[in-house]
Amino acid sequence: MTARLWQSLSLLALIAIAAMLFSLAVGSAQLSAAQLWAVVQGQGDALARTMVIDLRLPRALSAFAVGGLLAVAGALMQVLLRNPLADPYVLGLSGGASIGALAAMLAGVGGVLMSGSAFLGALLSTFLVFGLAHGSGGWTPSRLLLTGVVVAAGWGAVITLMLALSPADRLPGMLYWLMGDLSYARTPWPPLLLLLLTCIVLIPLGRSLNVLARGPQQAAALGVDVRPLEWGIYIAASLLTAAAVTTAGSIGFVGLVVPHMLRLLLGNDQRLILPACALAGGTLLVLADTLARTIIAPEQLPVGVITALLGVPTFLFLLYRSR
Amino acid sequence: MSRLVTQDLIINVPERHDGTALNIAIEPGQIWGVLGPNGAGKTTLLHTLAGLNAPRAGQVLLGEQPLETLRRRQIAQMLGMVFQERLDGFPATVLETALIGRHPYLSLWQMEGADDYARAEAALEQLDVAHLRHRLVSTLSGGERQRVAVATVLTQAPSIWLADEPTNHLDLHHQSAVMALMAQQAAQGSAVMMCLHDLNLAARWCDHILLLYPNGEACWGPRDTMLVPSALESLYRQRLTVVEVEGAPVFVPIKG
Image (cartoon, each protein chain N blue to C red):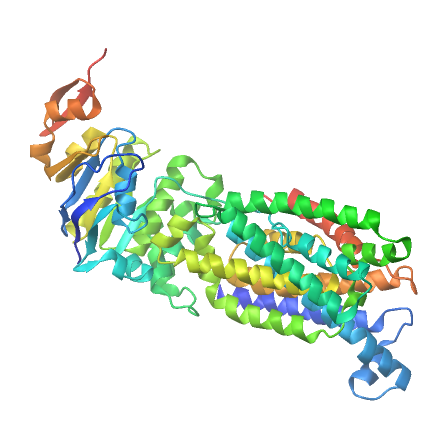
């Protein structure tokens, strides 16, 4: 098991690095491998250096962090709700964040204020869903799921209303945010650090999560403190999603598709799946973002469109091939 | 070796009167059978004894300590539970399933070692499911899944076994095999309690019996004082006839 774990993770890390280099070299202006190597060594011409270090590297790192956060959050939500259809947004979190962000855009503010507004919206939605699902009895996965789905539908209506009422010149920006766009990302370090921290905390909890996936009673009988663990997963997954949505808008499919693809390929040991999700989710989003900014360069596509177009057929193929 | 003791225990079955307070001691080497009609609270009783359900009143002692003062991990190192219902939400192989029985013994950063694998393999062998080790549990038959569940608790190697209808879905041969396993565990010093629907398995394999009535009343004691046809007839509201086979009574429902 240990050997398999390191083999799989090393392979995924190598792929992630390759994807990263690819995204640094490719764009509206192509760089050759030699030019890229010169920049990495601290040489090369100033234009190439600016392009790689100031423009492409932060964006690629942001993409990696966001993809990783979404995939890990999705894997956690699936274990928490014991439902393979759960994704990071299933509890209405992206809806809340979208309303925060769109409200900021309507008010004409951007930058840090918009990110803060999105983050607040995400947290508000989290607490709303959790409070409502808790009700007078304790919460159960199915109640949490239903409450989340209904609240998300409510947010969807409010978003449509806001779009309908907003002035035409603001619409493109709002639509791009809704479909996910990494050009909103500023510094990659907060989400990247959060991702690293999460992986360090989650790996020792992996075996408890494996047991929890078999139901709360079985887990309790095998020595897991179920309630604290479930609370921890819920808060962690919400924070990760909120950080991802705040960085790059709501990007679909990564959180649903990546954990599933990895489960089909690697089995269902969370000790392997969670770090693998961080690497593979990050890789997928780095590649998707590279495509998004090159296909019709110098124009850009929303990255959410690319993740869906890449993710859906890959996922369906793996599902079709699986036992 | 530890014992499980209840002090004035009243299990929490919704909308039911308190009934009899339970004062029982399940000692090492004993095999207890819990009998009662549907809805009498057999499963609730086992879950309460395992600390998974809170009692309405009274307490459960594991060894000398009240259950609620122990951590789940400490409880799981002494007490194992075979559940009647299982969730197989995510795919897992038979071997992986048996291995989670080692969870209470491993520290956070520890991976399963050779010893843990050996225990899981031995348990699968004993339950006659070792040949299925790489199959997904969700693809097995009901009886095979039941044996995997028993093998998981055997991997856990508790000194107190609580088993909720451990012979569910099993064919006759494997019913006997699982009951013989329980007897073997008791002979090695474990304390065993199981809910059973089959009176005849209880008559054959258990040495102590707890009768649980739907109104919360209960009585308990050594097998021969409990398996009285008149008491069983009122318990199940079913007339019975008794024959003797190999020295043990066999209860057969009378038609009509």
